[in-house]
Amino acid sequence: MTKPRNYQTEAVIIKKTKLGEADRILALYTPHLGKIHGVAKGVRRPRSKLSGHLELLTHSQISLIRGRNLDTIIGSQTISSFFELKSDLDLTSYALYAIELVNQFTADHIENKPLFRLLLETMQQLCQGGDNELLLRYFELNLLELVGYRPQLMLCVSCRLPLKPVINSFWLSAGGMLCPSCTQSQPLIYPVSINGLKVLRLLQDCDYTTIGRLRMNQELGSELEQLMRSYLRYLLERELKSAVWLDSLKQLGR
Picture 1: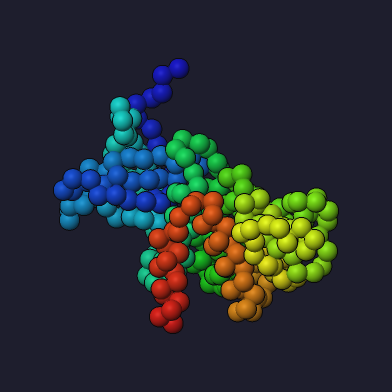
Picture 2: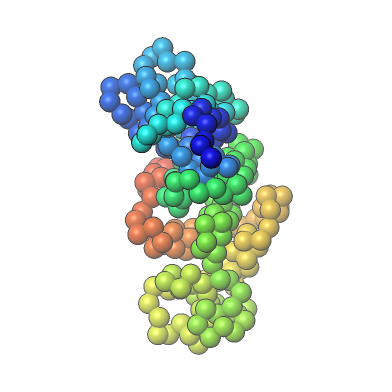
């Protein structure tokens, strides 16, 4: 069946790239089409009517025309501008980190409605305030599950025995925990404290309401951040640009 030439979709703008003197190619994450790309012609001109509706971190209803190689965006209406995210540098950095993860872990035209909901809910939660570092760990773990990389946190990935309440280790190349007996001979491992493993397990299976009741001290937060960053870097084989920016803001004491 031939697809209609014109179509509409709800989307979050997750990346923009300059094209020529006045155009942009936008990466759009949608609930039913997955990640798609479209060219917004003339959007960089000062008088463009579309520009305000097609900024990064904007949730919009977008109209497109199918093209041979790239679809063209012909209309857009903002659903949520997420003004709070764009007016606070710290919140901007957290949100950019989230959309870069989505962009890096998804291929084009693969529907993943739960991932779209996760991204949208995370952006909404960032606007409401709270422990944003904890929120990012929740987002990372749930994104990994939705794209097929759910970490094994209940059993040792080597001997397959249940983990005891002691200091275990996370094995990057196997995507899961190692018990002390299996840790000795393996490279690329990160020790995980008893409380660290408890929090990871909780975040893997809880919802946003539960996150709001959690409290995490700085030492535990740093432990989990280092672990998750290392695992994501291992999977992607590169460091995220937004992660580098997050670190630079922390060093400036923001």
